[in-house]
Amino acid sequence: MTGFTFAEKALARAAGVDAVRAGDVLDVRPDLIFSHDNTAAIRRIFEQIGAPRLARPERMAITLDHAAPAPTTQHAANHAEIRRFAADHGVAHFFEVGRGICHQVISEEALILPGETIFGSDSHTTHFGWMGAFGMGVGRTEMAALWATGALWIRVPEAVQIVLEGRLQPGVTAKDVCLRLLGDLGMTGGQYRSIEFAGSGVAALPLDERPVIPNMMAEFGAMNAYFPPDEVIFAALNARRTRDYAPLYPDADADYAERHHLDVSAVEPLVALPHQPDHVVPVSQAQGKPVDQAFIGTCTGARYSDLAAAAQVVRGRRLRSRLIVIPASSAVLEQAARSGVLLDLIAAGAAVASPGCGPCMGNHLGVPAPNEATISTGSRNFRGRMGTAGAPIYLSNPYVAAASAVTGCITHPGEFL
Amino acid sequence: MSRHRVWVYGDNVNTDVIFPGKYTYTLKSLEEIAAHALEDLDPAFTAGAELGDVIVAGFNWGCGSSREQAVTAVKHRGVPAILAASFSGLYFRNCINQGIRPIVLPGLSAAVQTGDFIEIAGDFVLAAGVRYSIPPLSGTAQAILDAGGLTPMLQKRFRGAITPLTGIGGGE
Image (cartoon, rainbow over all chains, first blue to last red; front, side, top):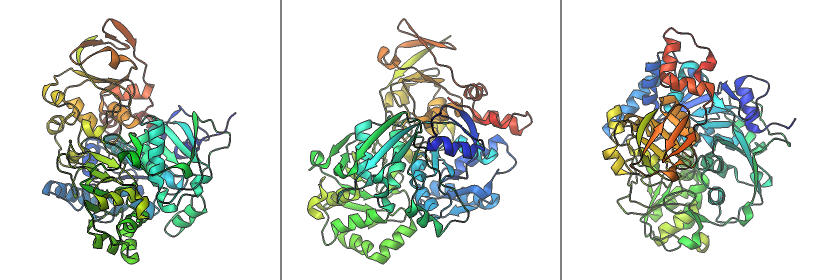
């Protein structure tokens, strides 16, 4: 008998059974569930279902982040409804506007731990693989079902192993690793699969950058993604956690549908061209394309290391395009304020906004005019993603985005480092 | 067997163009949501889709954001089924949960054009003279679909009729 993948082990644990295999269908009880600005819509479905109460309010988190602080009266009314719901139903973990993006905040607060299972009404819930948790996005109706019952059906995914080796070059980040994988394997490479990373390249990734890769595996079609947790992860969580945990590791002889290798030391700065995250080219092939704004933000590009990278590039320089900086969380903003990174960004002319998702999905704080080009550290560049159908969106790491803000066109960061 | 006009699309159609993100926290009524279906993909569909029309697509239909309105909008625009070479996992689940039939049929999108008519039966599709077998869903997924979606199924559970815990879900 072959060994078990991470997904098989994690879902067996979450279902309370001894063993499961890829393809099995079972009901699992996640350790935490969360929603965000979509909570009010989920509540309406929950009320239709007719459950008398929330099954496990002590294991629920809500962040206001997707359009926060509220840009319009309608958005404000949505937030008000969510605040009332959280208070009335005793939702244990509620995070106000300005605290930050759901995935970042829940990670910082150590509300989920290695080996546990987390479902969020957000497709980037694959994020939590950074610590070795099973994270999966669900729809609004599924989240309402989770509120009502505490459980949800899952078809245990087949798994793909990706072995990372080597160490990133200067000016290259985890974002480039994602783009390389998407460019090579396409947007369906991980469809409905567990993407399980391994190899010496994982431990060589800076802690701050690790979440980028499992998060962006959503663009790969993944159901979840996984990094094997190490001492660096345990130390980061130990300061905040309120319960014990037992990390999970796939067996050496686990059955993988595919295996891929990537030497990350050979990865160069990359750009995804409009309008798909797998339309990936080296920066040199996009060099010179004009950009009207650069956006350092989102759950894949606004941690402290991203802000610091942008500051390193723009320090003491003037910008030819707009630069919008939206930290992933208040903790990131605080760190950037204390270290001086924020001052460098402001001095160069950056527009710095309150932590949250910003213009990533077109709600506010940097929606482009028709035909205006944006280079973004975000994860999606689909047509209309930032609110304007005709506006081209390029995806890159923060060095490339900041260098492009300096020159006003897509630029290799090499000369700025 | 029922007859349907088709709207044909390619690979990797994402939820941002099926239902733009900028509307996700402000539009509430089904009519409002349906009025924006496929707005950034095909304005001709948004304006001209009729009750009973179906969508035929390539690989990875519904990739990207998990937003369920990308299913809600299409369903309430009158579309009873989506036939794609493959679906994103989230979109597939959202279809089941909303009671709209996801049919996985590689090859169909290359065989028909927008405006053509196809016929759909319980376990096969007839298109351009060719019969395509529809792969069966898992028992529980089919049960959710038969109940009209996850919400009606759970309504039964919480308002009287007893269904076991495993009645919540079901695989592909």
